[in-house]
Amino acid sequence: MLPGRNIKAYIARIRNASLPEMTYRVSRAITVRRMRANLKSRKKVPHIPPLDEIKTHDLHMPSFVMEVDGSVVEDIFSGRVFTLNGNRDAMYQFGAAWRRTYFADIRPAPESPDIRMVWEPARLQHLTILMAYVHQRPRSPGINIVKSFVRERLLAWIRHNPFLSGPHYMSPMECGLRMPVFFYALAVLDNLPPAGRREILKALYLHAWWVSRNLSLYSSLGNHTICECAGLIFAGTVFRRTAEGQMWVKKGARLMEEELQRQVLEDGGPLEQSLAYHRFVLDLFWLAADFLEKNSSEDCKGWKQRLGRAEAFLDAFRDGQGYMPSIGDSDGGYAVAPGIAPMRTAGADRYSNKVATFPDAGYTLFRFPGEGLLSLDHGPLGMPPLYNHGHADALSVTFSLKGVPFLIDSGTYRYNGEPQWRRYFKGTRAHNTVSIDGRDQAEQETGFIWKYPYSTRIIRNETGNSFLFIEAEHDGYKRLEQPVAHRRAVFRVDDFTFLVRDRFSGQGLHTYELNWHLHPRAEVKNDAGWWRIENGKVVIFLRLMGVGDFDLLCGGMNPIKGWYSPQYGIREACPVLTRSVEGEPEETEFITMICAGQRIEEEKFERAICRMRTSD
Image 1 (cartoon, rainbow, N blue to C red):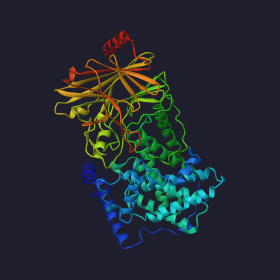
Image 2 (cartoon, helix red, strand yellow; image 1 turned 90 degrees about the vertical axis):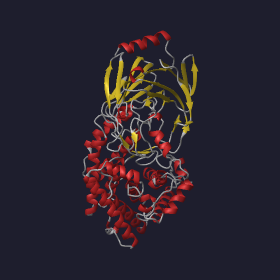
Image 3 (cartoon, rainbow, N blue to C red; image 1 turned 90 degrees about the horizontal axis):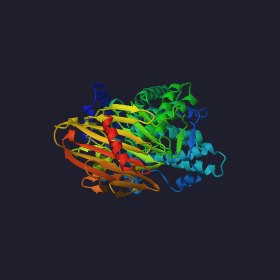
């Protein structure tokens, strides 16, 4: 991030920065100013090696797993690009208005399109789909037409987006994601004229030169870094006979290996606390590892062992029908392209037991015999020191049955342009947990920076053939003037019934708000104290004990409450069962019963509560 673009965020970053980071950021700022002056005076920086001497015929494409058919190709020929559900006309107007402006001088207005949406088409992943299609079907009828289409569109993009001009150079991450696309073109398009080949090589070199001097480091280390380093590996391999190219490969591989150890935890979970970004960076690791092994002497066996654990972690979050909840931020991004993934090795461990706890990432998963999955989040806020993509969702629960989502994570919606919605979807009230005094479990300083991060701990975790009980606690509300700790227990009654109990300790009088967010398709009815929730032909039941009954709300605006984002850029109202009570911490308790398929008998219900209380 550069000074002037978002002063509040920049100050927050500086406050979290070490002296080496401050030095690095000052150096980057100087480089940005110097390049502005160089481009204005038409000074040729950097020096580009003789492009006709760059050989790529002996380099190999990475392996892809594709779910792309001819209809997708036809859609792209008809003008389809990926826009993250943004207004395509507004996005292109924004790009055209700023196309000749030095990237650091661009100042989006409050009414401008979300810059994340603007960047999406410039990842050129619609062209990646076509090139992967060409690579896997080189003799298909009409394949030369596809090649010509890609060639013309790619060269047009390069010509319309000169180096460091326009919005598509604002983020080194975006430059990093384009570099593999340039390589695919060099490897697949055998119809490139010499001048076109030189244009692509020049664009690749300039992207890598810029990224190598503007890497996301220190407090910015994260998924951006992985994108940038993957790009450097591709570019450095192409320019492997130059000193600069060799440095790019070395730097990219070293940083990726370091970040693999940091961002992928020992249990396979994500330091970033986002399942979507975990999938995104894992695919970048797989992509880079495959490319390195095919085109160098690099051995990535160590990478693959850790990546295998990460695949097993993600696999554990899928219910019997493959449904996975959305936890943490998700921007709808792909490492390669929609419908295309790098070749992966499945995790060695399969979590098919009734319960699996991931102590490092901080999740416990309960499986139901009827292909159901309940998750309890007892992990940290996110990746320190800024916790960019984490949500304030400590002790939140999600639940799906037979591939049908019931208790949902509300999603992300969008990053830019609507701060009130960004604040809501990241906040505690948008998750299936308890908020206290209307505040989040941590404090949102900006859309990507948290302060006062909470800690979580497991208090008790007992599992057996017929007994499953876990209790965890977070301290996010200890920062209040009268501090409170929130403790949640999940107790298995039988194969189809769970109890969720929320208790509190601390001081003072507070307001406690319990929320259970339901999928927008769910039909919700109150039936003799039970809430019957049907989605499709699948049914679950919820019941609240001891503090009155839930209220049913959908699409509230004051305050914002009861909203769901199924994809980036889309939001819709969703039902939420909510209950708010006021009281002293020690005197306040919520008990929610969750039944899959059919509700529990009243006598068994009372016995279950007694059993849970006596298990303390």
